[in-house]
Image (cartoon, rainbow, N blue to C red; front, top):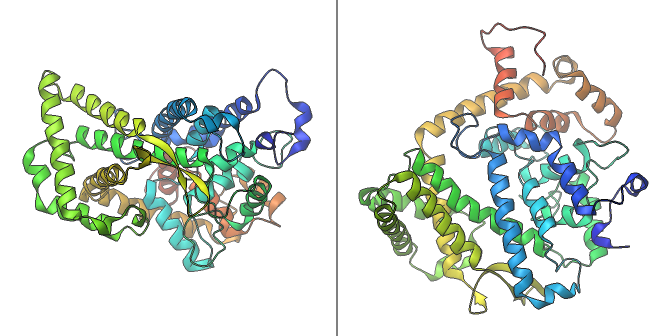
Length: 438
């Protein structure tokens, strides 16, 4: 048996057609799932529905998958050891990477990172259990989504499940902020043991998916920011000391950003250089694109994606005894390029997420999620206003599904628009028909 194509719910294998590869089945199950369709109504940076131009979680995921698939193809030609498939975790199958990229944001609740932050705060404060978007991915893939005959959610292959698992830890561990809920970690840990993956390491496919997510975020979100006028393409904006200070502050305060040696460089000086270089590149392209802003935006985005994607490589991680997918220059990790990407990510963050109008929308989002939570959290009254199919599913699985987790699952599955609709029905002076379909 190919352990990469093993499925946790093997009893459904008798119904499989021989006409499709296992990963083709995974792809079909994923893109035809309600959770995947809902990504079109979930915020990336700007609220879903803000405008036709701006990215949603769905378009972001499609772009990540395109980058990841093409990089995987290139790396397979570049590194001979990949063709030998000596270890199931040291393989780069473009199909697996593509599926993992499409699935990587399924667990995000409505209203982007603010929704995740609020749900986590409520669950921790009131019940001592966490909410985390990456963990919620696995709730969806392994439990919440259903397919006929399967008791394991979408019942995806082991290779795809482990390619989604960029944080290979249990949130049951003390102090752990990223990982899986204990309810799903047991089976994932079992797969990892059967593959003999070192503790704390991810498969090459998971690492590539994660890096391509960062590439997309650091390029595409800036394109949206320029289009929205939040990032102003003039020298005064890019040389503004307040902008530089805010970017530096975000870098210094990011505790997950310690692995690329910021202590070894003058952070302020590097931020200034990267921002000025970005603007000067824009100036040159703006002229060559006949001073058309839309063409210049697209060309800037394409060049930076090409630069980052072209530098992705694989090196030995001597400390872990494993391989690492990262930016590579002359056989060594390209720390300077990693820092450059991080600066662009922080530029997007401080100019978009920290914008006071976006903060107002996030405050509004927080109010809505808190009040939805208050409406549903008491089982006796909450069950009266939650759709019957959800209640029936809860009754079937309540031996392994606590009411607080159930409510979090229900709220987190909402799109931005649906969350606003339910909130309006409960709290706003709004008339409507009881025959509207949920």
